[in-house]
Amino acid sequence: MAEQKEVSVATAHSGLTGNIVFLNREPYQREGLRVQLICPGTGRAIVEALLRGEADYTNVLAGPIMAAVGGAPLKFVLDYQHRGWELWARPEIMTVSDLVGKTIAQTSPLAEKYLHAALQRHGVDPRAVRTGQPVFSPQGILAGEVDAALLLAPMTAEAERAGLRRLLGAAEIGDPPTYGLMTTDERLRSHPDEVRRMIRATLNSVRQLLEDPTRRFALVKELGTPDELVEAALEATIGHLDATGDIPAETQRRWIEIACEATGVQHPVPLTQVFDFGILHQLESA
Image (spheres, rainbow, N blue to C red):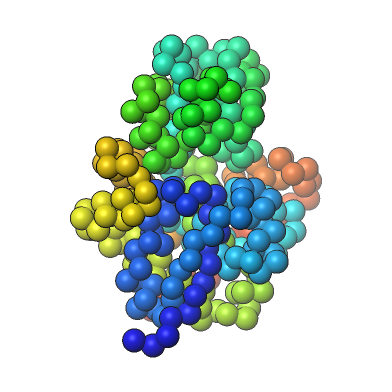
């Protein structure tokens, strides 16, 4: 086999179930790629890793989307999971209405907007709920740092096992950015063939995971997920994987509108400033 080119993907946490797409090595090997997951931090740290060339891609979306809206030379080139966030709370909080006066962990403005809409559908004014410190695992809820938090798998499975209560599922929260691929404008210009191979491999990886339960089970275990959490973590992930790679223009516009509001950008931002599905659409028509 020819020498594999190493590419790095920045992620927020190496144990996230959405990362199994990149642990599924065979589709990338067929494209001459070897993916290395790196964890430079969250939010702005991931944006800086991309802009400094320390990461070639990221599957974390909210921070880079907001940076792109603000003019950073970044592009969203592929979506592979646009649902998965769930709201978990202390067990004594029985319903969404019980969140009034309680504290929900701070999250990205893009996810927060969807969460607020879900609260309103349950008759809860988001202004009646306090925003606490960021919490990314059930431990922060159990320790009393906040009363509830948005979580992704496998932390959702961990929360269930710990006796926390799921107040809102992924379908109720909707489609905030979850997992995809973003890269720099420079990489799109200078390495278009690599980006093409990366997109094709990621789509093929998703298809394999959707079709092969044994493969996805093994990969979630490879993440370090405890055996007793693997099935629940997969259940919270697999149904939301998307092998098309695209997202509707309406969703793209909503993400940009929320990002503009969060960052103070007041001028119109075209979809093409943030999203570039050109290579994806070329692959679809090939």
